[in-house]
Image (cartoon, rainbow, N blue to C red; front, side):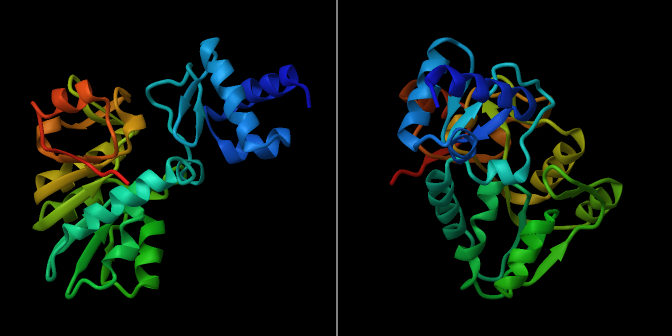
Length: 252
């Protein structure tokens, strides 16, 4: 397939999906990973898209839009695994922890299987299933199920969390910066994240560096409300964020 045709297909696909993985684009065009990377570099130079770890996203994505779980799971896989491993090491025996529907948060689960007397509270159907596979004691919060993220939301969850004491809460985010804090597209999911943070002794946000500078519709916390666990940030961004919260960079 000639270069111009590949570029046309990529841009057409971005109009409907907003976020695409490299694997998506290889299937779409039949091109190799190196060819796709060159295509994305060229299109980014033309200011037609934005490259992110593991793929690309549309420059025209709106504050309320978000990728499906299946798309997000393919992005920044190695970074997410390293962040998740570090986060899981913070969990102690005999603790109650909260895990939201973030794809990086989900990757913590295999590293939790040897914790003793651990209780996990989650609003993620996918997480609940994986936790059951590892035979980890789990409470899944009931509510309205969001098809995009497979997370439950709603007033029943708020009532339950209001009566909980959580040792540690681990959350994903769609964006973070020092002005707008931690944000996500959906206000209902934002409300669950906010409550989990409020009812925990310590909260952590797990986010790879591609989320830095991204802002979505609904703010769920100031930077100071939770520690940030990420991969390698630009030096200036790292030092700036340190003025607001503890930042841990997990590097290979």
